[in-house]
Image (cartoon, rainbow over all chains, first blue to last red; front, top):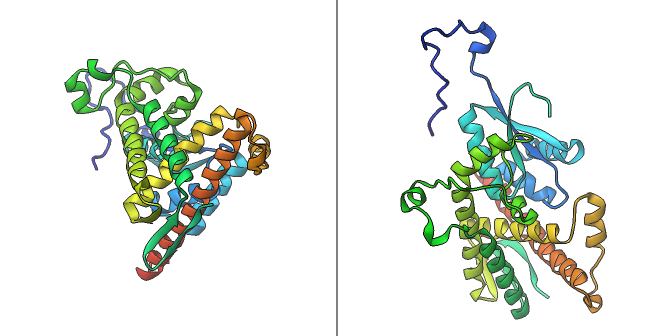
Length: 103
Length: 194
C-alpha cells in the first residue's frame, strides 16, 4: 500500500506553512448509523477488516448506534479513502472528513 | 423453513428450501441488475481498464444511492470526484459477490468457506439495504414496525410480502454473521491473539 503524498512545500512563492499545519493532517473515517445494518455485522466488519479486538469493535459499533456516528480510524487521505471504499463494499455508510471538523 | 447457518467441524453450513433458493436467486440477480453500469457497451475500454467512470453521477434511485453512497458528507463536488474514481470498482465488487452467492444456490445444502461466507454476507446485506429502502425504513421505529410482520398468511399486499422477505433475509444474515463471528473467535484463540 502506498502512502499519500502531501503537496510539495517547495513551490516557488509559497508562504512558509504554519508549523502546526506542516504536520501531516490526519483524516477521519466516519461510520454512520443506519436502521438496517445489523449490530453484529458492523462489529464483524470492524474486527475482521481493521483487526480490532471484539471489545474495541463492539465499543465503536455501540458508539455508531447510540451517537449516530463514530471516528473509526484516522490516517492519511489516501488510506482513509481506501477505507471508505472498503466500508461501502461491505454496505456500511462511511465518509471521509478532515480531522478537527465537526459533522 | 431453512436451517440457520452454523459454524462447526465442516465450516459454516446451512440449508435452504427450494422456494427460498429461488427467492434469493431472484433477489441477488435483481441487485446485480441495479449495479450494472448504465454506460454498457459504449464505455471507453481504457476507462474500464483503469477503473474510471468519468460520467458517473449520484444515483437518482435512493436504493442504488444507498449501495453507492457519497463519500464526503455535505460536499457534492468532492463526492462526485471520488465517485468517478472509485464507483466502477465498487459496483463490480458488489455485483461479483452477489453473482458468487447466486452460484452457490445450486445446492440446497450450503457449505461456505471464508471467501463464500464473505460473498454471502455482503450479498445478503446489499439485498437488505435495497429492500429497506423500498419499504421506507428510515428509523429504528420503522425497522421495528417491519420486523413485527412475521405471518406469511397475511402476505396479501406487496408491502407485507416485501416485509416478510426482508425479515427472512435478515434472519438468514443474522445466523450467518453469528457463525462467522464464531469462526473468527475460534481462529483468534487458536493464534493466541486474544
